[in-house]
Length: 123
Image (cartoon, rainbow, N blue to C red):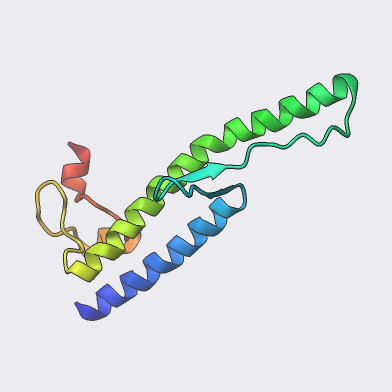
């Protein structure tokens, strides 16, 4: 069991690093709210003029708005990963948060940050 937990810990740490790198490509950590990220809002440099300036601004704002759902999903996944790492430390990893039964290893291998067994997930 200890070997499985160590593999899961390493997998979770790798996932965490990948997600943080992905978030850093378009956001920064919020200094006020723990585990929150803030998408970088476009800064308009004023190099464009007239109608093209409005088009560029519109495109940048649209891109910003399109990133917000991705930021939210990555934040949720990162939260679950951090929770799973804490559970490993506490000896509570792999226990369904609803029914308190063991989550099958096969599920944890696929989704190491899983918080629920499949039975409870479907309810």
